[in-house]
Length: 183
Image (cartoon, rainbow, N blue to C red; front, side, top):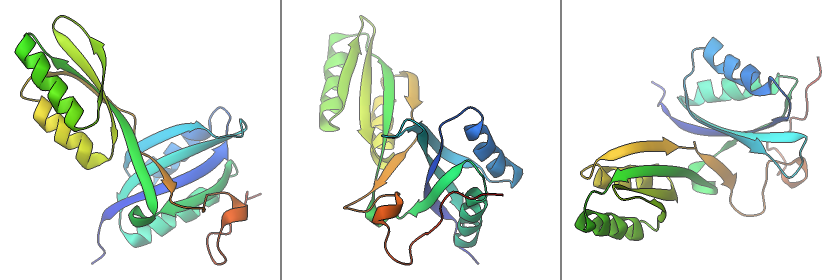
């Protein structure tokens, strides 16, 4: 039996209307659930980078990558291993802080996690945290006793460690060697 695990995909695509929709349709059409999705432009304004996390087995992950590469709007696809990549997401948490004591405890928790207090109101504090899944879940668990009023997560972004990038000129021989596909 194949083991289901989290796979992180980095995908370079054309930065134009409808591209994200085409990529998302590929996943939904095949019955795959996207666990996390983050999109933004790269240093080249004509290219966007999509970071997708999906829970699948090894065979399904290879199939997804192959199917993504067939899309005309896709320049490059790369699976990022957890051992050789840096993964982070931004989490904003608005917490109830009705008293001075509660506010001080929340600030101490934020400091332990190296989070920032980005808004202070008479009845609440808003915290910004950058980290991985386990860090986000740990602070969320601790803050839940105060009452989480709102929480939003950006979705995971990831880069490979060291000199290697998704760009063609830094790829090792034998690594993904797919450029833009043409029909």
